[in-house]
Image (tube, rainbow, N blue to C red; front, top):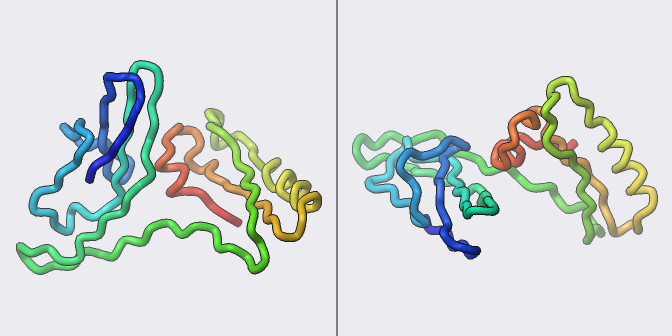
Length: 151
């Protein structure tokens, strides 16, 4: 897997599997030699320079057979996006930020804001909440995407 990034040098890279850093994976390319069932999972990379950091989307890898012993891993399923309702071509997504007081923080205001927006937008628009408070105490973009709930 290879990532291309631009920005003021020097750029550093940190590859992750299922949200966990991969030791020694610090180049813009991640090579998996003799990939097997244990290598199945979600891969992402964090690119950083002196002033900024950006995380990639997660790429899901499924190794369907392990050539050494012909065992098949469980099929992984990538998170499914919101389905598009008929006649809707625009989306307003309402979410919250990092919640260090979780699990005691309340983000119930999101649902009320979605209702208020939906009343005001044309019929071809959809307002939807994006809840990820179950992992909001840990500012990790991969967890937010993987654990989000679209009611």
